[in-house]
Amino acid sequence: MADDVLVIDGDAHINEPLEVFEEFLDDAHRDRRPKPITDTKGLNRILLDGKLYPEPRLTQNHTKKVQGSQLGGQQRGARDPIARLDDMDTDGIDIQVMYGSLGLATSTITDVDFASAMARACNDYYASFCAPNPDRLKCMATLAIQDIPSAADEARRAVTELGHVGLTLPPNHRGMNLDDEYFFPIYEVAQELGVPVSIHWGNGSHLTAAGTERFDTHFMVHAIGHPFEQMIALASIVCGGVVEAFPNLRFGFLEAGCGWAAYWVERLDEHFERRSREMPKMTREPSEYFADGNLFLSSEPDERLIPVVMEQLGAGCVFYASDYPHTDSKFPFSVKCVRERDDLPDGALPGLLGANAARYYGFELADTVR
Image (cartoon, rainbow, N blue to C red; front, side):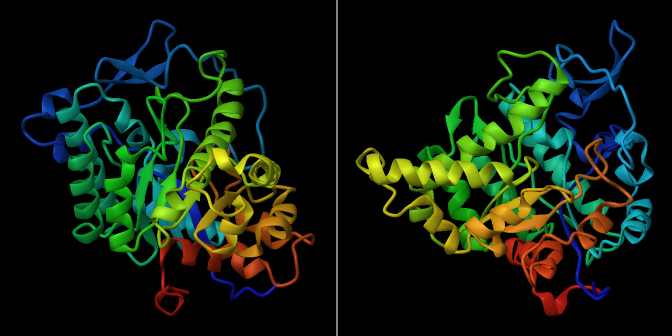
């Protein structure tokens, strides 16, 4: 396989150092900045807005090491952009698009003004993280969607002033689905600016999710929350008519793999055939919306169902993601996992490794670094 294939990591993370909030939180909220704490079990957690992160109700017990995955917050590149660039070189990544970690929990903060201040602080810090090499380091904006007008203003600031390449939303907001008109001002800003909206859940972040009310282990909540919330989010956005209302807006469904989409879209197609009158804002089969090129899925490097999804929904809708530096990551072998696959459709490798993510994030391939 050619070494000149552009590699874009479509979903990695920054672990925000808590000390940065002393600098980036405004004066009015700095004394409420997130703080480290050791809980009664002797585990390190973050105290934010009266809540502990990760949620202490989730039990965790790592039983074995997986090749390249024992990273967590110990990997220097989780917090250090220079070390991050070195790790990207080691793994073979040209460009990395990064999401927050604690930033995913912004919409769970009770105090609305403080939530908005935290979103601004996170986005300012993300911009500073990218500053050493903005051609290779890209960030997504976090939003405090408790206050939609403020969130829409912050979305515009993050993109136009800070250079962030898109907006991040949870799969629901306190049980409100993403086809609710409550979210439309965010979609309007994203479509106007030509940036995508990524749907990204966060385990242990007090975000509402399927399964969280029934299980209390990291294993079950993580395994269920990510894919099932993405299934609901996709159904809401497609069947609820959001793709019809915003035909030029790109949506990405991240960190749940892509295999679920093959089953789910086929099931939604079947329901459209039999019960389409119940979804008056959807005028075509859900699978047909994928053909428009505005719906994207991130995938695990070694996910066996990638060829199935590409065959069913199109080779252009799936892109590689490392999830670095979280424990799911295959670093430093994530790109190697993809390059060594022999089961992909002919010609699909460049798209999976980079070109599809470039289209999703709106990168001009001619302007990307090599």
